Length: 502
Image (cartoon, rainbow, N blue to C red; front, side, top):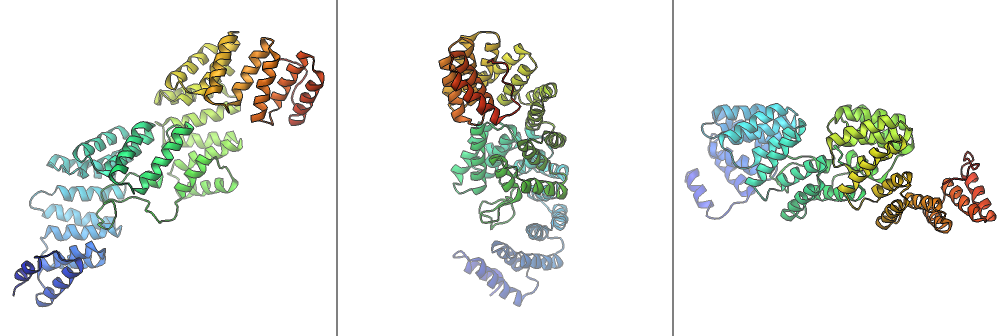
């Protein structure tokens, strides 16, 4: 009985990979040059993850038939899984040269390898060739999107992901990648929609779950888009590894130890600024000087420690890496504002807004900087714009109330502060502002109530004690005024109590 006859009989039911390997091994004992036996056995080895055996079989087959393009293609698959990317590229190149018909799949596979070794222009060339050949599987568009994204062309990357989704609407990979890209550009609602669509297809897609959780935290806290790539946000290309649950390579798998990027991201969101964390960021910068995200993280830690000069230096380096991302400019502007360098802060907020006009945080902060610079009309315009972007932005109403108070439009100031408090009852600054307006109107009881509410939230605020002391003084309650002045001096010995003004 010949090999072909045996194959027909056995394929009356599906064979397991182990049965195929046993059958092919027996066939090769009979005929060591049986090309089909080598081919079938290699595929079976790949199915069970024995890529060393796959490589060995395809090496033997290429010796028997050195014109067999599939042998080089499959061996390249094995090399790819072993991360021997240069060998994989060499074999994919041979398979392209020897291929007789449609070689677009070979170009796509080689494009993946070029992506993995960061030769993105070569990858784009291969993906584009496959697309022009007429390959409509979606893999070519997904791969090219990753390459464009790594080159910084996020707009084209999103377009390619969208084309892949149009071709393959249930592609978890294309949906996840586009979600990650929208997250980077600050289009959070679109990112959330893509993550939800990906999870509808694959509810246990762990990487997207983590990205979605982080996104919701960023949306809730008002954090602007951060061009920081975390393991769970990494754009993915179609994988050649059949063992992978989702059918593509992701940089973090369930059960693996938490990566540096994941730990740093958690620390960033949690506000950690410990010496140990800063040392870890510094070590990361030395190890990977081309990773701009480390400067963002360390700069944020320095900022939270009040070391604004070092924060500015790190954010300046981050801008070198991410010149088209608003977050680095906003972060540096925040540091300049803390130093009292309002012109530089305004310049950075303005640059950030040129990149992301709907960044409400930048509008609010620039408005505050304009206030400090006594440019009230410009401040008023920024607070109005922040409110137009988000009518529930309590900070913006609080900021606008300061302009109204300066213009002595006290009723409007009170309305804005009251709105701010209703939107965010924990916004202590709004109580202070409203208390000042009440004091200006001579309503000292209402002022005292607001200063007390502020102190219930911020019990160590020396200025609030001084202001409440002033209100008590104006009411003639000198005992209460003295107690508040004493507490204010205790908290801040440098505070000036000689002028009782609001």
